[in-house]
Length: 441
Ligand code: PLP
View (cartoon, rainbow, N blue to C red):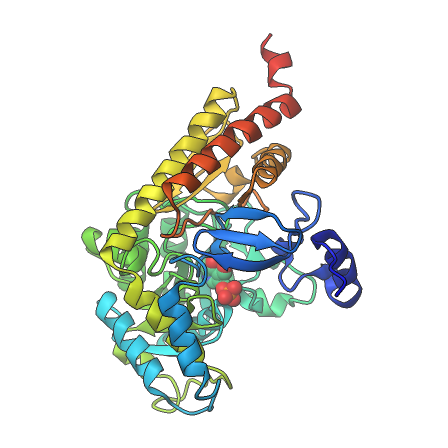
């Protein structure tokens, strides 16, 4: 058998797949070089086709919370697969998984499964519009909610920018009912609701923004969203595709929202609930969820929705997400996040180390980042250098300065040591690249 490496595979891939990838960020475009072709994962590690191994701080962008090939998840998947991959009919696993989600997230009274976070959000928006009889959706710049047309819009810097399509092929008509506000801007929100609150069907927000790097909500921000939607007859959709069942046993809301005393009307989940298989969900108050067909008239469907293998994987993953797992995730995130920040400081590299629960990221920026406009001011060339330094030393992190980093519960003390020693090296070469020495001497 002829074996070829990642770089050759990528060249070959580009002939048959646009950019060689099935999702753009994987192409390494913003950091340069070529993606690594991973062929195996075990616990905290991933192995590429060239024979290199890495500590994995991507975790498939969130789902691999227990690490790769966790024995209980593998067993559940294999056992279920033996009895067929799909029936296109209801099955016990989806009921059990729905019950597990409901048990963990109190405001979630019913759950509908879909195959991707994008679909979950599309359905949540449709439900909110149907429930309120209104059209307008408010979202925040820098928050990503999947690639459906209505939400693929970016903000301008004005108070309430009418959404303009973020991608060719998305019509102005598709986004004309989407208003984009700056994240963490209470004044802009109040102003919008004072004038147009009665037209708003829903606010959608990431529970903590983690698609522009880790940018947590300022204290009271999410609460204000709940208050404003409630007082204006609109719904709050809390997008926990990234944070759900990762930040705590019940996600971001459980850890931060519940203590603050507010509740969303709808949640969207993905990533962890499929344990690496395509699975996502909409969950919420029964009165809203019951608008979905076949009970109500809001149409939503999917050939593979609630797939038995995907739900078996999700169920086994959640069953193994014990309190001890969350303790470990928090510990590893702190050890790695603080350790890397220390290495960057030691190298004289100005940065902002930011956390959103156990998600974290680093901005090569002069101050704390609280919104997308500030995130865009970071020095992405420095990030690219730092990224490659880590990769060279066997640490795989997101190939973009605008992504959060993910730890798994499989990370060991030895992995932490390896990451921190790699960070020392990566910080040193980033410092040389940045010419910090020249500026300060
Ligand atoms: N919502 C959030 C907060 C996400 O982070 C993502 C994906 O990263 C999505 C929605 C879309 O999920 P998917 O990629 O499964 O369509």
